[in-house]
Image (cartoon, rainbow over all chains, first blue to last red):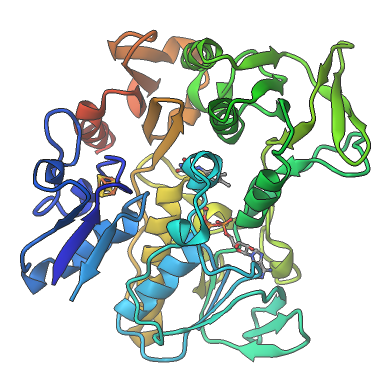
Length: 71
Length: 391
Ligand SMILES: Cc1cc2nc3c(=O)[nH]c(=O)nc-3n(C[C@H](O)[C@H](O)[C@H](O)COP(=O)(O)OP(=O)(O)OC[C@H]3O[C@@H](n4cnc5c(N)ncnc54)[C@H](O)[C@@H]3O)c2cc1C
Ligand code: SF4
């Protein structure tokens, strides 16, 4: 499982951080920290299956629907 | 298993039922012709940037064939004692468990209106009508200064139109935010060129196929080629009548979102009136996007466990969160600021009302809500402070 975040859709709501703090965080300006790693689309490395529930929750709760899960 | 209402709450409930391992048949039934989509962008970026449908379509965690989705299908009536649903096409469907997610529709003012009608904004089709009528328009009147009215004012101003907002309150968003914050946001709008005509009520809208002017109770008259009503909403509960339910202001539920006396029936999203024990035992409806997600997820999971094994269902105690984007301003709310109406109990915690600010809402000196203008880097901190205060 990988998470893919469309950084053009994301508007830094930070809701994902409450659901899956293991994966998502905001930097000290309040922006999604993946912005430092990618410009348009951030694609994670392979994630442990034990994170699935929290990643699904993050994808559901993202107001911009910017998070996709790839299997 | 049936879910009535194919929007945010219904989709999340159907997804959660499947995810919880429920292996019977699940059907998601919705009146709109579209696959479930995201409403908040309708008054914001989808209007300004002319997004197409794919951009606002909701994602689902379920596989395409995990459950049946019946679109363009209105549920006329339900018989809870028989477990039978009656559809507009005359057919019926039996069920063991029901999730009601039928949400709201726009309320309309009962005043004289032009024969061509005026607009409101709740659905994607409403957005298409609005876009289709923008051509040649220079002046717009928005009736209502709640969140949707103010978001529309910001978006249409950004598109280059001259916008007047008419409403009876002294400041916009008075009830959810209080006087001082409402006034502060009004100033930002005015700096961008929005005109507010407050403390007055529209009594008539003149025009033919297109509106031409809005007349108010103090005799004032505002010309406009486009008029949008944003005066609140009505609950879609008619289909639930005649089952002995309390349907005054949504569906009355217990603290687990079950209908009183029907443990296998749940309500979610904007129509659910439930006590949130994080605050108190008073049942309220909460028109927040995040509550539709959380309640849908809760109800889907709970219904799966009720049907499987009669396991006890957990209480639904969500931390409400709401946001609104108006011009470059992000308004973020946590908790229930609307519980506090007395202005002495609404106080600036940090920052400055003219700039970025955190405002606290206290009920009997206990913090029950925080609203932030900007302050993106502090959202986490205040959400946590509030959660700690509520215990
Ligand atoms: C323009 C706009 C902007 C918004 N902006 C924000 C925001 O910035 N932040 C925020 O937190 N919230 C916002 N909201 C609120 C948020 O969108 C709602 O809380 C959310 O849509 C509620 O979802 P729901 O599934 O409960 O109901 P709804 O989205 O209202 O969906 C109910 C569905 O049920 C269907 N239905 C009704 N009756 C029947 C029937 N008898 N048979 C079959 N189907 C039926 C309807 O057609 C509809 O599709 C906004 C809402 C609007 C309209
Ligand atoms: S919840 Fe969505 S919009 Fe918000 S920061 Fe996370 S990915 Fe971005």
